[in-house]
Image (tube, rainbow, N blue to C red):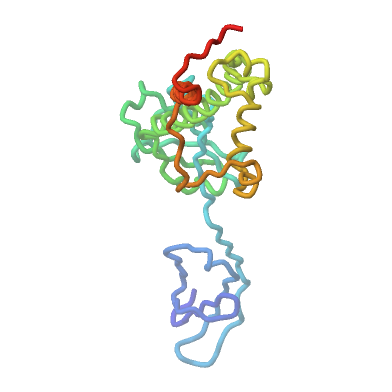
Length: 272
């Protein structure tokens, strides 16, 4: 390197602000990807050297690690532990995994699975993980924290509530079926037959309080008789017609007195 030279750095044909013979990228991001080259010049003169060979710089974002819960819903009542799995989607075969509890690394072999039990974690802490590799990239991003606190309790309460609802509906359905099958039918004495709704003529004759249909018919016929028919029959009855007050015994005594008067007070023998 000769003294008095100034260096100009270019990325994809555009000049950068860096002017030293060293170009340092302090914080590498994906936007730094591109072809880098430099040009030398002396002072502020217009004399420029040829461009150097371009160096290709490729920057990739580190892959993201994720935590997945492997314990299924059906295993909640049979176990009190949770099985977590850490994974990196990009090239999954090249990764080993480091687990962290509350930000502190867990001393255990590099494995993708970690089991949380009441014995090793009675407080149910926050867990994270990160993938590590022997090649580039040497490690991945740390996963989002996974909160196990009260997870088993919440799932068991939810399953218990769902089970109670299903059991209640099933019990009501079975009860309706059993009641329909084994329900005792009503006694025959309590169900009146159609023939007993109206009494027969034989039953009416046996009853003392039943009116004779013929008498009822005659009585109704007399009540329905018009005044004209009554005059033709020689009987007139109205509100102003006086009712006879002489009984049969009084008529007999009157008849006897009349006969005695005709015979001049003589006695009449009834013997023949």
